[in-house]
Image (cartoon, rainbow, N blue to C red):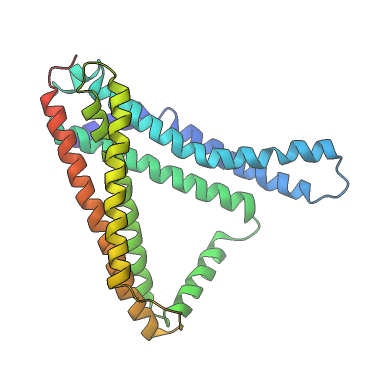
Length: 273
């Protein structure tokens, strides 16, 4: 049933996000040619001013794709679970857990798609003349030099980074869901209370993360001036593992709290107003 819910979520949210990602990529191509034209010295000032306006538009689009992803996520959850459509959703023969996870998975996919679209757009705008494989190779060679040709350290560091980033995405989604589910428990001012509880929950999560990182940095993390080579890489990897593991742990704690709040409030609202 979870697979069916995920497929339905994709159908409901795929009208806008793919189009926006394509627009961002197209603006990346446009920005590339605009930058080439701006290098020409014989262009009139008005033309240069007009072409120059494309760059701020491109930067705004890079940000907008994330903003729209958040809006789509919030609007979908509000309409499909907390709105009139929620009458049908909450009476389906599925658990609240399946409903929440279907939305988390689909939202995470759209956030990842937005990040990939931005990365492709930036490459098209500024590095189109360079092969992406050569860029990756140069980065890899630099990391290999830093780690003393220890490929596993690089792979492990990237895995920790990706796992932590994914946990951060899930935590952000659940933060919105928890706030919405709490705010819509009030008879009036539902969105106002939702915004209030979002900032309260987000602030509490941020304080927890900050305190844990500060304590960790003062008592454990001791990386000093880099000295390239295997011994430094192994030591740095141990501290990177500790840092990412701690951040991941805090994300999991926050996600667990947000998840429980969402489940409890949704189960209390089987008869929606």
